[in-house]
Length: 128
Image (cartoon, rainbow, N blue to C red; front, side, top):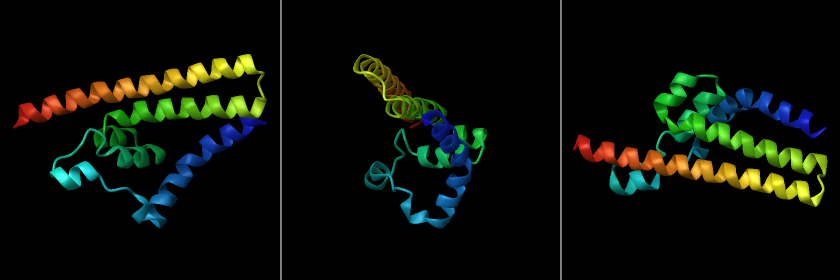
């Protein structure tokens, strides 16, 4: 049952993304870093990129922020792990394994963000 719900959720995302951004434009967050400094931050464009990805526009997503695809894949991995763990009512030892996978996905995302942030700020420093 959890697998069916997960597949239905994943199938609905491309339909819900444009609907939400069209009907609730105020829900798109404003970048505090850019507001204070006037400069873009490493995650500027990530929301736009995820919206483009939900519309099926991979090139638009990557042009908005190269981290978009990595964030989306890892987030879907986390959602999958948690949905399966909760839906299948796994025994405690299996839940610990799922928790380790989930923590590993978090570490990958933080590592990707860290590496991208360093490259982003180095590029910004070299451009000036």
